[in-house]
Length: 123
Picture 1 (cartoon, rainbow, N blue to C red):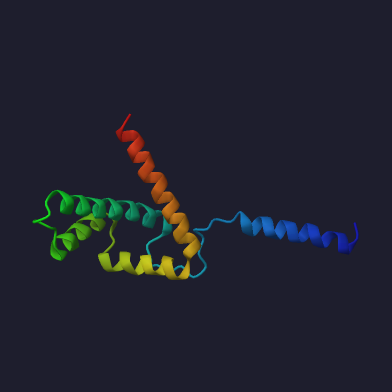
Picture 2: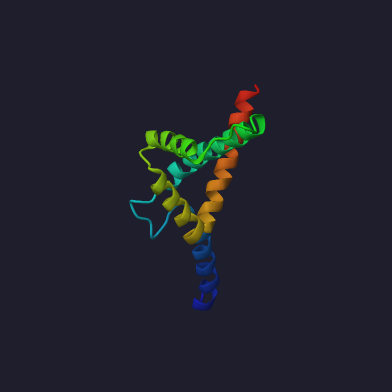
């Protein structure tokens, strides 16, 4: 095989390796950012809390959950994971602004997890 014939083969394998890599593998990842697998689970919990708040406001329009109550809910929700609300928000901003492909992957996982919960609930 000539050198010129090897170039397309090399390019194909280079493309295949980069296309198949894990989108959660981040080059500029640092320890104060919540890891992607944990972030996905936290997103599930936060979205469920937001749903609870919205449902609460619909069912009791005169008694809405205030900022202090929601801040406490988020703190209690994140505490078992060892994550502060500030760290969660910083991690959310990090993924949203610097790694939108990873954020898209996190939300795909969130959707999958929520669908699994619904399926289990209605079995």
